[in-house]
Image (cartoon, rainbow, N blue to C red; front, top):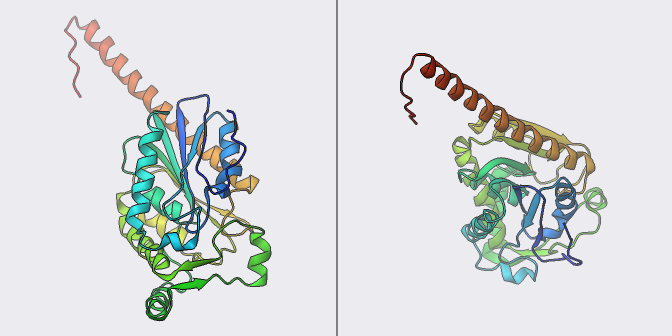
Length: 280
């Protein structure tokens, strides 16, 4: 589990000691580095962790021009294929936009669980946001990020872009709408996490996800009084670790029950002196 010395604005990979991998996806206009505290914690539990860098990120805001949500999804799928070489069971998680993309990847058979952190299917003033972005794009190419003093204090020092192309923000809004439509197709266990004071994502968003997915194992967890990006919060890290442990335990229990049923079937056939036939 040797760590590289510098992760800033670069993808990173932490080799674990078991066959379980965790793909962590960063948020829009932010670097993978924001997921490093969580990655280190999960790696300390033995998991292999990979955090790729989405196109247009980690350089300058101008590089987001011309990049679409389909490009980011393709980047995530490519990283998932790489993780399959390292692990037989994979959890996928992400913060903000990365959480949305995590849900969109979930039909892949290698994925056994999802962690959606601050993922949005509904922003504050969602309809207004889309209208504002449309008209803003008619007169501006870029917009500077603005935060209230309270939000700025909570967020601390970040190495994220300080301005962004308006067309790129539109892609994020479209991704939120597409994720909401996709929810019924999600069947994997999912942990839905959000800050109680998130300044971007509506408090209704976690419940919409919870009600919309078809997953049998699902939970909402609120992170108290933290910024939108909370991967460095110890309680959040521990909750994610507990969720992964629980999903693995459920899978092992199901496998054990399956084996027991097969053994009982074999014993019954043997007792009757019959021949064994295996069916799928």
